[in-house]
Length: 229
Image 1 (cartoon, rainbow, N blue to C red):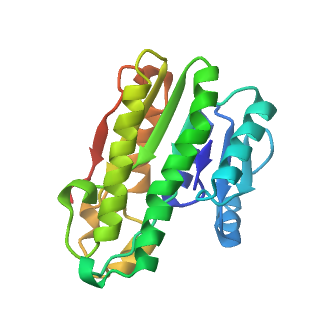
Image 2: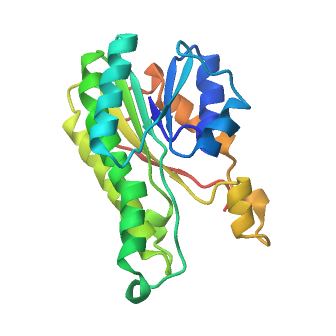
């Protein structure tokens, strides 16, 4: 189960997981996201299914998790990839709408995904929960306080969940990307040194391992995936 699975990082992760015979359920929000994804992958109910669901809606996410678990018998993996960035404002200039948007996209989406997934992961016998924080949660650059605070909250959430999973065969870890090399991020920084940014596939390779059964000894980690940036 991957919320926000049709974006750049999600598509890279899907490409890797599908080669390992995962059956995947993905959420998206905008129709153009689904159209772009369907241009890359064959979507069907058995191997890859898409659901238009707002990950900031707790009832919708909870209902979807239950539906997927009933359809496939179990959920072993849950990954929260929903997120967004809105910088360019000091704290004193950050309006309520911008702050709430960053909390919704980055923290509430992760919390609701995790809360809905955990009972199913535990019931499956073993499970992997993966959240996506950011390097900014620790470097905390100025001008993007709302984003920094939201991603710091994701890191704290992941570490808390890991403590609560002690004694189970379910783990929770957090990836910490820097700027990811996608067309969208290039458009926001046309003069940047892109070669130093990690690619979606490089980050997906780390996520692939963390979502595997072999990663069971890693729990509560906040893992930097900065590339050379």
